[in-house]
Amino acid sequence: MSASNFETDNHERRIVLHVDMDSFFALVEVREHPNLIGKALCIVMRFNPTLRRGVVRTCSYEARKSGVHSAMPISRAHKLCPNCTFLPVNMELYKTASCNVM
Image (cartoon, rainbow, N blue to C red; front, side, top):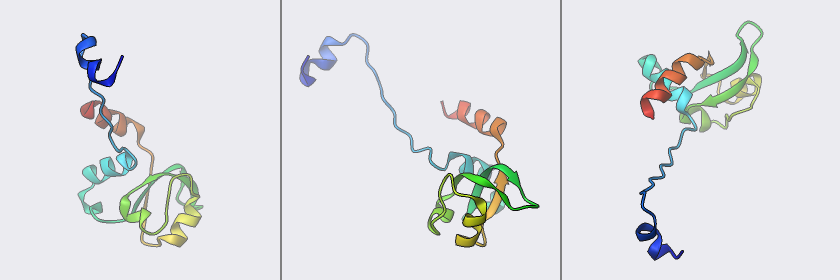
């Protein structure tokens, strides 16, 4: 089937939506905590604030500007971005927000 015949040959119309969800968890946290607007933020798996241990699950674009990225140990993220706020993953909150997007 050629590209020009695709819509005429296909009885059901299909819509494909691409959404950039790279910092979705961080944006949901900012929505919940407006004091974090414009600040560097990391969402951390296996977060232990006392030992400064954990792994960056995702981060805000403000943190990315400093070189922070997913799968980075928070010890390294803190060195790159000392003013960063670190929050633990809150999966129930993200699931609820995701259902609202879909």
